[in-house]
Structure formats: structure tokens, C-alpha cells
Length: 515
Image (cartoon, rainbow, N blue to C red; front, side, top):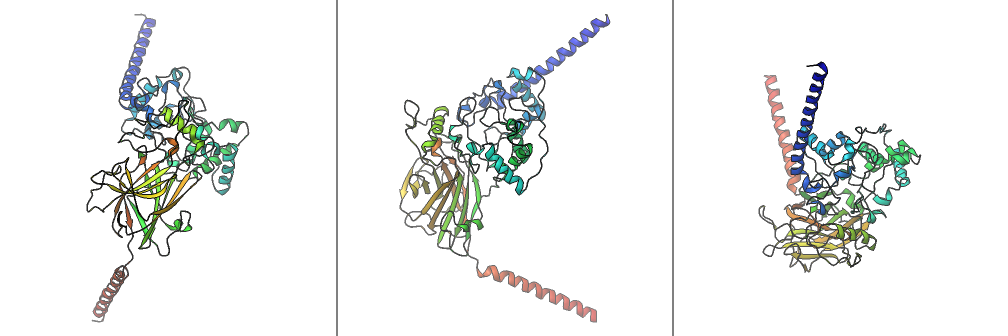
């Protein structure tokens, strides 16, 4: 065989082998994709899986190759490392989870299969990451400069002055497909798409989020509107708006015992000395109509009592002060584009205009009697046989008490619960006050006894009403007991006994030394 023919044969063998390897990788990727990804992203990568219509934001359409989290420029493809990062940690603020159960090779197979949905990945050389420069550092001056850059780049138009996603443009936002999309709540940095570190935020600001209204600041930087240092300072400012890590979940709201009087309202400075407890909320997806994308994803609870009365402050972020006609466009988009799973409220007329505006609301739920063991009522509003005791509030009706015999049933009860609520810069503050002892209907709280509590919240401007809510599981409220004499006397006795025992040992040692 001639040498030329031999070389051609070897080359053909290598190409066929490589093609077979790629085909096998794609087959492995296809199997994994069909199992774990297709339900959301669709069998053909069109973002139209069976679960997609209930998600906000909608799943990625791989055929268009528009990726939000990248280290490449606006409009460019992501690197394989970018895609691997998303598979490792997911996309906070969306329904896309991380996939730690997959091996690195399985993730690489999935990445290759995902890339096969779009011709753009094969159309040119592999994309290169941008040079993001070095961080000049933070500090008070950097934060002040970042706050100014926040205004210069008009970030408040979407994210709001306080960063809670309540800017004037927020009710009109939609992605490239015309689906509604929320402005990120910058005060919940742990849920930011792409990460919460200063470097992560700087990368997102500089590259933008393709397919969303979030632009790339690199154009403004290159044209001199802001300097490279100011973009870094903006990242520091955004990172300072709230905690970067999700607050630690604790099972019990510790209701402190007041040394003086109770706070008089939700803005009382006394709340600054009282510990706040964070509780996450998830969409109510058990009973129809379900809610897969609730607006309120967590609440903060503080409590204090004086032995006869107790006061609570409940706070949560909500970009709209519902009912609000300025959010009609948003409400109409939600009702028109989301799969609301049997929700047929007459909220839109034949032209698509809003005819019903719902209020914002929140509910605290307790058993009527403190259980002896772990048994508790059904966490979604109780049942006919085992109802729950409710503290209710809505922006239309104010504060009330009720009996729940199921999630869609609230029977008003007379009671002594009082409260006020204030909405400011995308955040509700609800103040509740009630005697510890209940009247004829209700629950008497006891000091030192853990009492089950669960939470629900509704954003009316997102079409949330009735069972379409954000909900929590059961947690506990614990009223601190008044310190007794034993708390002081017992340590004192221990100290005296320890001292006496030590004195005996010293005297014995001294006696031995004399002998």
C-alpha cells in the first residue's frame, strides 16, 4: 500500500472514530436532557415543555442561543465554562436548579447536546471571555459613587430607588418573547440571577442579560457615560443593598419579653433591638388553582410581649401596592400568558383590559388549641374537622381574625387583634397587636410553650387571590418567660458551693504542708 493511501486510511479512521465519539456524547446528552430538562425546555429546546407555561421567567429557548449568564459580550455566545457554571449552581431567581447529582462528564454531554439545538455554536470560533479588569475596592466613597452611577445608568427605572423591583418601568417589562418578566429585587442578593458577589454583579452589569430588558453597561462605559471604576463602584453599591446569602432558616420565632412598653406601630425605633426571623414562601401548588411563580418569596417576623399583650411586625417585599391601576398592564400580561391552572376569575374584558383588581394580603395561621405532640392541622387553611385560627390582613379590608376550614374558606371572628400596615419603596410593614389571652374564639398564647404558626401572602397585581398564594410550612412561635428567682439564685448557689469546695481543698493542702 502506498504511503499516501495509508495516510488517507488512517485519517479516515480517525475522523470516523471522532465522529462516533461525538455522536455517542450527543446520545448520552440526549438521554440526560430528555430525562431532566425537556419538561421545562421542551423536547426540541424551544422553551415549551409541559411545565413552561406556569413558570416566570419562562425557560430558555436553546434554538435562539440567548443566554443571560455569560462572561462574554452582549449578544455573544457563552463559553462552555459559563454553561457548566449554570449546571453547577442553577439560576437563582428562576426555576432553574443546579444539578449536583450529575457527574462532570454528564454535564459536558448535556452541554454538547444543548449546543446542538442552535447553529450559532458551529458557525464560528469558540467565544472568548471579556477582560473585566480589577476591582478598585469598596468603602464609603465607592458606595457613594456607585449610588450616583445607579442613577446615571437609570437603574431605578426598573429596580426602584431602594432596589426592590418597583421602578416606574417595572409593570411594563417583558422578555424577548413578549412574556412578562420581573425586575430583580436587588435587596435579596442571594436570589440574583448569576450570583451575589461583587464580581458576579459587576459581570452581569457589564455584559447584560440577553433576552431580558437588562442592558449591557459596557456600551455606556465605552462611550464615556460611566468609567470602568464607576461600574465596579455600582457593583459594590448593589451588593450593599441587602444580604448576599439567604438568611438562615430557624424553626422558632422567639418573642422577646419587653423590659419596657411594647412598640406602638411598625416604625417604632424599639423594633431595631428585636431579633427578626426570616421564613421562605413557595408557590401553593397542591390545590387548584395553583401558583407556581409567587411574587412574595419570603417574610420577616419580629415579636415582643409584656406578659399581657404581644406585638408582631411582619415585613415582606412586594413591588406593587395593590390594588394599583398602574400595574394593570402587568396584571393583564400575567393573566393572559401564564397557565393559571383552572383560575377563571373575570379579570379581563374582551379587549384584554383589567376589570378586577385584587388587594395585597397576608395571613398568619395557628391551631385553635396547642397540640400536645407533633400533630398539627392541615397547613393549607385547616379542614372542616380541624379548623385553624387566622390573623388576616388585606390592603382593602385591614386586620381581622377568622376561622379557616380549608384554604378558600375564612369565617370572620370577633376578636381583639389590632393592626396597621404601611407600604414604602416596595416593602410592606404590618403591625399586629393582641392580648395574650384570647376571648371566646381564638387561641390563648402561653409563655414558654411553642405554638405552631404558618404564613401565606398574596400580590393582587400578579393575579394572586384565593388559593393562588405564596405559602410556608408550619413553624413555631415561642413567648419568652419572665426570669424567675431560680434563674438568679441557682447560679449564685453554684458559685458559693464551688468557692466552698475550693476553700476545703486549699486548707487540706495547707495542713499537709505543715505536717
